[in-house]
Length: 496
Image (cartoon, rainbow, N blue to C red; front, side):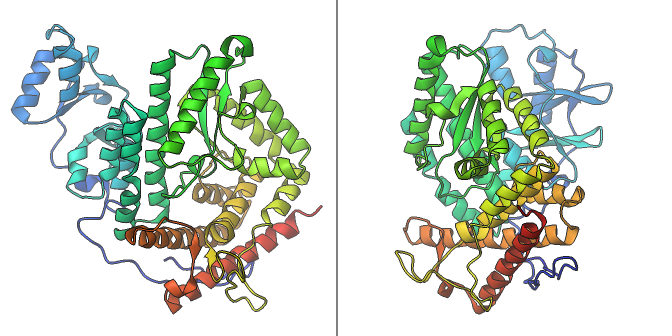
């Protein structure tokens, strides 16, 4: 746990350094650089090389892929899977150049990136080979097998398995492994930031596969669309327990009479499939299968215009969900332009921001009059602390206000706080304090859920302080005080 020094401009309380966890050599992807995974110099060929010559070189060098270079710059790559699917199965002439079967402009990682970045890239895009660059120079290739040797890579194979499924029932079976994945990440002392990205990458894969299966059943979409994640999925902050928040932005060529039934069936199929996979229906019906949240781009633009100019209570509640958006599948430009317009509308809009801050203050850290922990005094969860709604959500709310105030495009809470500090919307010290508080609270939530799952219980967000040590309770109190202090600062800044 990182240090929380007192911020001179907020007088935020301090959380002491708890030190780094012991390093397990088999579970070091979170800190290991990509360079440590490289085992040999890159095997490369120019794009005019014949397919047969490339296959012979792969056999001689005992590699499953080759990088294609043009004037020493990465041009593309081919894999043994390409030879099987694009050459042998298709009966392609092996004297054709390899550029005819290559993956052009492939995803890549940099030499000094954490190995986790490569894992995440593979999981999100269902790929097994990733080039490594050192600046513009090609340094090598890493594969899913390289990551397997470091363990903690089940996300890559789980994502791959998801894309192989041809039925909702198959996806449902694959989704049962998500809880075990979170448990293994917790056991590996993975950060909450990394865990959230990995778990969310699996949700993205399930969502994308459901859309692919839906289109295979219904036929190609009659007009362009983009499926958009909202809430924690959009922020890449999911855990094994979550409901679904999503929507659909349609091209303005959409005609309800001509196209409405198609998209109604597609979104019903996907949302029902997500529910079957454990992503329960949103209690507030904020899902793409709800007609209100499946609209042309122009209607979405009108929604956001009204919410920002008339910030009444319901609008503020909706903005907390739909201002956190990320494209998952489809024509991403439909969302990109919309988000840009929204940020232009919210930046410097002090009246709207004051309402957003007021709404954010409805989620207060559970502290008593003397700043000690104050668990619930009654109800089903008496004696517990809701780590999500009273811990993580207040920080998410603060970061969202900073992003909207500064016009920052980031969606992840950690990244929003970094941008807010860079833009001067919050002091660097306060941003560090909130990031560290978020990491501590989110990690505590993940560990709590991992213990519940290990005992065969359904995971929840309600922590009994007796579950943790006295030292952790002190850390928890200090984290809540950081949040409370920064809430007060923002409240004073944006007054009605």
